[in-house]
Image 1: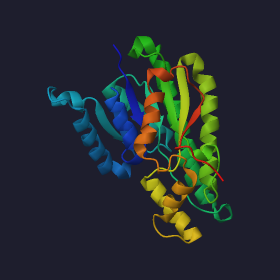
Image 2: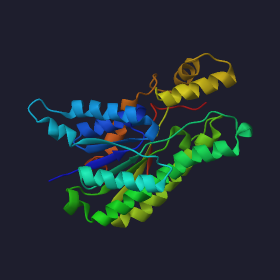
Image 3: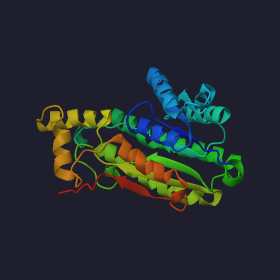
Length: 279
């Protein structure tokens, strides 16, 4: 019997929420995670996913048992360890970690402060590292994934970005953090392969989310454009498919990376950007 359990960090909204919904639709039991100050959003997302997954002829308890919420700050290794432990206790053996939580910052590099560096790298690099390593320790302790959960391999996924391949100006620290995720993913994949754990990253482009609203505001302030104008300009100028990405576009790639068709894929950072063309 296949028993698949996932943690998705930063999943109370945006891309993380879309990923969590895709996973429950694909048969995963899912833990919704976000920072403690987002508890209300966590609870709302849990309730929404439970409603989405419930079948008319099933008792409510089945949906309740497939989606839980756990608040934890990914920058704390001990909190991530607790997140993993609680998920396993309530949902079963961990087969997928999606280290999705991240923050963006729009600021020219000469204006970046030490506090800015600490903030961005703490979430985007240290947070991913904590999720990768705590998940891997749990998966190794569980033993053979086929015997434990009926899956061929355990899976760890991380959120990179298009800027892990090509940096954007005024997004220097964010770009640096995502290059680090790309390197960390490759190194982790090589080290975890003997344990039947694959490690990959997904790299969204310009996505219509709250994070890109923040980037739009920052670019507009620096380059003299109004609200929404930078998002439209960058989408029109750079995206070959002619539209801004939606969270569901990213969730589709994660659906592939979390499914059996990608069991032989590891160490990759895959773009999901609509064919961004840099000029």
